[in-house]
Length: 353
Ligand SMILES: [Zn+2]
Image (cartoon, rainbow, N blue to C red; front, side, top):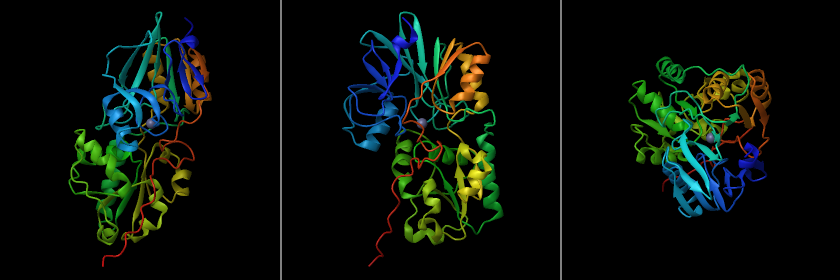
């Protein structure tokens, strides 16, 4: 079987003809395998969804328990047969529950990595290399200029700023699923034990991470009336809130933003970010290249992001490589020009009677 007979792109997403399923379809389909809970990969309305338990629960939190006709839990590493095609899920290190999906038939194995990273993340299992014939990779940061520093150092910058400006509220823009909880967990690992305050759009998923056993310490919601009391405190909010009226009521706020894109100074300046923190949930260039090599694949397919450089690089390593030109991915908050997972703006609460 040719790899493209086992899996190929269609409008809805990656399609497996013998298995009669899509991976991460962008519109409702009969049967979907889902890599992770970000809204661009996990949509509601499918007839049947196969995903890790954590991803199924995240989808239920976001869309309600009836987000799909039927659901089936994929245990990590376990082989499941779908219409004669063997599939298995393996950790991707991207967000809680995120998985790569290995699809295998007639001795050909294709690994669809979804979104992934190799850097340390206390909120999810680390990426696992799965040997394969064809590796399907994202390329959000697929240019040699992208080299993410260790996230611990970026969190140390926030702690240093808190010491330097004890009278200023420190707002940190972060996407609601994964990034916000990772920043909180990294602050805890660095020994920060004050309450970390949450914008309303962060509460639901942060509470969910806590229920899933991720250590986050005390994370009270910041009510609108309390904004003036946030001197010297850390407040995690959606990136869009940094520019809202919402953020202006804090005492002399320092605007921080945790994103892989913060490596681009122009972007930080354009967003009015005073404290850029380069913390990414995607692989940077060296990790993309290292991962492709470690899988031992002979062929690389690139799903979304900056495909050209990675396809070219793979060619120089003797791999067959091609972009899949999948559309609809990359709005988990780190993609260009995206509003991300900021959630709706928080409404002003009526004044107490
Ligand atoms: Zn994602």
